[in-house]
Image 1: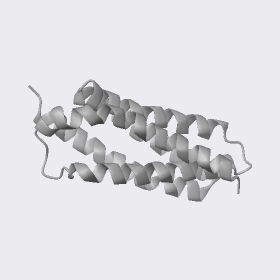
Image 2 (image 1 turned 180 degrees about the horizontal axis):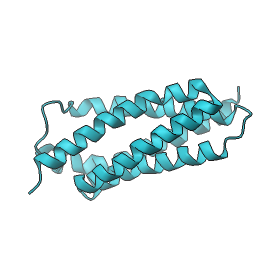
Image 3 (image 1 turned 60 degrees about the vertical axis):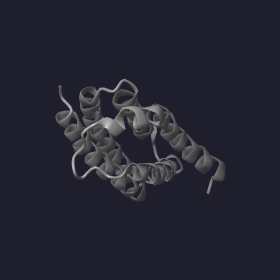
Image 4 (image 1 turned 90 degrees about the vertical axis):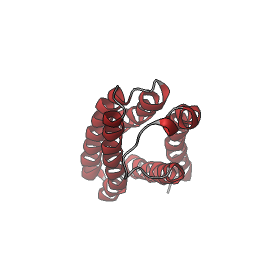
Amino acid sequence: MDIIKLIICLVICQIAGLLGAVFNIKSIPRWYSKLKKPRFNPPNWIFGPVWTILYFLMGISVYLVLVSGKETTGAALIFSIQLVLNVLWSALFFGIKKPSFAFIEIILLEISILVTIALFYKISIIASYLLIPYFLWVGFASILNFSIWRLNKS
């Protein structure tokens, strides 16, 4: 086990979460709290713990791929792209307050996660399975994003 590489993978994923949170901090009380939301909208407090766990699983997943001893360039690139798309969603939704743009982007994020899972599966089945909760949560977030956009169109 390469503990340094594991820590780097975990830290990079958590930093992505922190970058996304930069957009959320001011927008949640000032903008998001005033939006109409569907009945299935979770309470705000749930998002932090869920995302922390998901970023942790992502870090372990990418670590398993990187230390597999197999060719990982393409998989690592797609993983990096989906991580950037993850942060970009927060910038679009909370930063510039455009749920419509964020919805288009989250569909691209969901596709990139699915491609990442498929590429990781060829390298490490466990790594791919660790991304399934992330894929499912972003799928739920896509439905939530769409619903908020539709409920607040003016």
